[in-house]
Length: 229
Image (cartoon, rainbow, N blue to C red; front, top):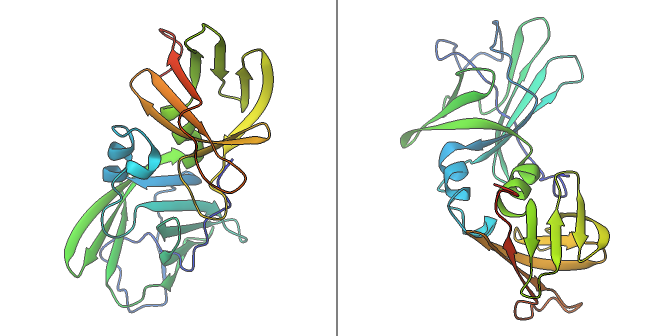
């Protein structure tokens, strides 16, 4: 389900620190990262302690990355934010690493395992570790929505892990819906869009009007014990 896939202008190559950044291509045996999405550890930890995704602290610099299968059977790694890219490195299936961007030595990327890599920026010198999450949208859904709830009248609401919601007996599809304004706290349930916050066991859903305004909480739901994270 990933939001209208963020546009990356750049991509970054994972390279051992001994490789000369001035070189266009080198041969190496890179640690094979899993295809999927990665978040910086600070951003990931912040997501786990806020009421909605927009409250998470991204920090300066890159916090989102994606590894994809390349056209030649290798891997492409992009690193940046939800809106911009920083650099690109392409790992070819024959061990050739091509540095697309940057080529000035301002960033070093080092694989730590199949699910983690570190990025060092040299101006100023800082290191950030990225961790595999498979899918940002699936993670946000897991942290903030999935579970069984009841409202004040005892009616049952369920957000399942397969993109289906039970809204008081009505089965509806649901998905994160950032829309054109890139709102990170919006979920579409059937035909309706809601802003959501989750504090402890309480999930609040505020319906969004066609004009984009948000009404006071129309649904305040309490998660039932043992039904979700």
